[in-house]
Image (cartoon, rainbow, N blue to C red):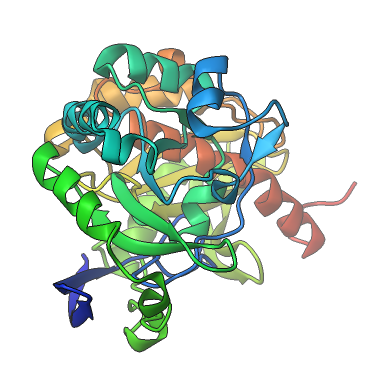
Length: 380
């Protein structure tokens, strides 16, 4: 569940009065140590994007063939940066709006040489972004952010997230406007761009986000009691074969809470480990995910069970969906890489949730190593 905080700022620029309405959602991000979400007056982070752009895209942004680039390398007065994801429904809704906005900017002699647009694919590879381009007709450059480095640096805001950046006297990019969620009007967006180009950047820097309360973090956790969760974990462990005779809740310094159980099996006593994963979705209309995975002392995943997983339309996963994910995960070692291939690994209409599951299992190696370090694994 999210809580909303509204902050209203009345900002005066020469000839312009802007009512800035900041809607800040309290949430838990993929990375608990993330930065707060960028707001009016913030400096855009010093991020190096991979220069995997083609010749036309590099020419559009005025870039050379260096391996990386930053938004400060783009000379134009205003840079529009959209954080998107190929599988985000609202990003797909916004795409045709931005196609029209891009075309309008390029057709306007007063805007064409002052404004550039760029998309950052949160959690997407270059190939996935090219598929997105083919499906939507987007023409502005798209750069991958497969590991969510840039997404986390701007505060894990959920997609789509669009920011308009002006350049200050030191050459830094300053947030002059920001949108969380869909922009529905291309004409309205272009008019906003015209207005932002009139802003006095010096006044923007006086309106730093320190004047705006930082969002309240809210722990992401299942809507179940500890007793209900332990019951689910017990069933998950016993589904691997055996009867749970003892269970304890362990809070590891780095990996957090993990459950350690002893099972009485036909071939003797076995130890099982269970982790409840709760993760915030990066799509603005998708539910957060909650699931359990059970593994043994060798780090082999023995069981995957949903606590709360949804797909398009926010329908809960059915048995077929759960079965597919079990086929993809059970029997694999936490010590191996969990690279996500949406064509093979994704549950139908639940690509984002599937990707988050794989990301979480990819962190299982650190959990396993910490259990070993803390003495919870038999050392032989």
